[in-house]
Amino acid sequence: MASYDSDSSSDGDELQTNVTLGYATEESTGDEISHIGGQPTWLDSNTTPSAALARCKACNGYMSLLLQLHADLQQHFPEDERRLFVWCCRKKQCSKKSGSVRAFREVKKAKFTTKPQAQPLPANSIVSQPKVDLGSQLFGGSSTPTTNTNRNPFSSDPSPPQSNGNPFSLSDLSSLAAKPPQKPAQSESPSPPTTTFADKLKISSPTAAITTTTANPSESWPPESSFPLPFRHSYLDAEAEYLDAANPPAAGPSNPNPLITNLDEDDTPSSARAEKDLYESSHDKTFSHFTKILSQNPEQILRYEFAGRPLLYSSTDAVAAHFVLPGHSHVRTSGPIKGIPRCGICGSARVFECQLVPHLIYELEKDDEEAMKIDGVGMEWGTIIVGTCSKNCGDEENRKVVFQEEWVGVQWEEEVRRKG
Image 1 (cartoon, rainbow, N blue to C red):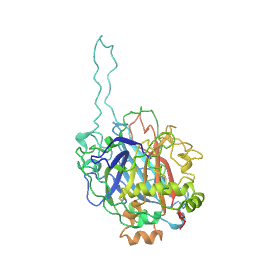
Image 2 (image 1 turned 135 degrees about the vertical axis):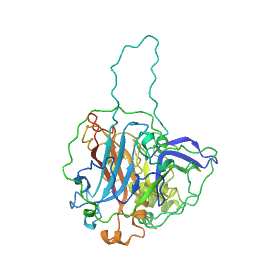
Image 3 (image 1 turned 60 degrees about the horizontal axis):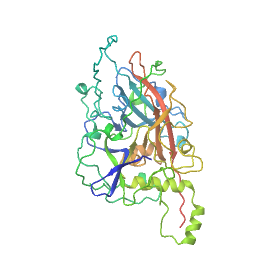
Image 4 (image 1 turned 180 degrees about the vertical axis):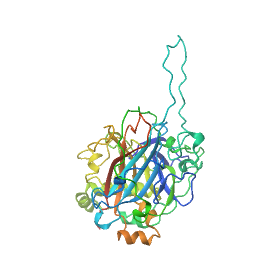
């Protein structure tokens, strides 16, 4: 879970987190690259990934695209072109099996002009450093503004972020995916939010580039007809995340996950409450926190915070073990993800980058009878967490496009028991 800004909205009822939320929209935002469903597109149409990256590890069949994200990180890797792809197998027999959801990163390192050899500088000389265009978008086009014809949907609307004036109450994850949410009401603010997705990430520490090599794809990318029927296509828009600050969260060593305090407060009599406390598992508390956070911005399909912390659906499964300290239910501080494989190209640690949340299921499957015929019951995951190389490594020497599979942690939908 993200940390919180000290600044709140104008009415003092909301706090802004470090998370940027993605929303599905039928209308183009000016960025034709970032989208859910549909078919993938590549940085270079002549350079495609190995088809093996889009095969389910359970059945070896081709998967369907969940998300394509134009993931340029202008504040971290300002010269690199970068995209993320998340796929899933829609066969019922592969549901909840390892390898039925996969992700890979596409990156092209910047091709710099030839640099002259360094010359001794005269005393008292001043060297001007190239400026990083913080106004460039994360989910937009090329890092070169003059050649980018795609606008970032995450910066297309200068109006204040949406806040949910009528949050819904969720009893289980099924209702998250199945029910169309209420559109959040707008909250007024005297100053507009940051105008780019990269600005919203608040990333200021650049990461050094590294030298790597890559191998040629092992399996040619097949024609679209080889893949299952794609999910419905929608564009992406984004807003900064604002949460209710009526009871300001106290973040700190004893409570690093904001809003986790008072999650269990209710009007249950003390005797029944004691029994309920004995019954409740840490999973129940984590799930309750998960649904309460999502309910404040119910149309979100994507949560983005590079090198941040995910919002866990459960604190008791194998995925949670990478983020939760033993004996605790809160997510540990941001940084490298413990215990997962390091980057397959450069060996660097991976960090949390983004996660998909259940309203995506609704957006992909609504009004799509064919989608339901394929998988029978629809997708059954609680959240999909993506961890990527912290160095954004690629082909430094030749500046060629590189595709690298990244880590995916899926927390599958579980029935959350409630005591009546």
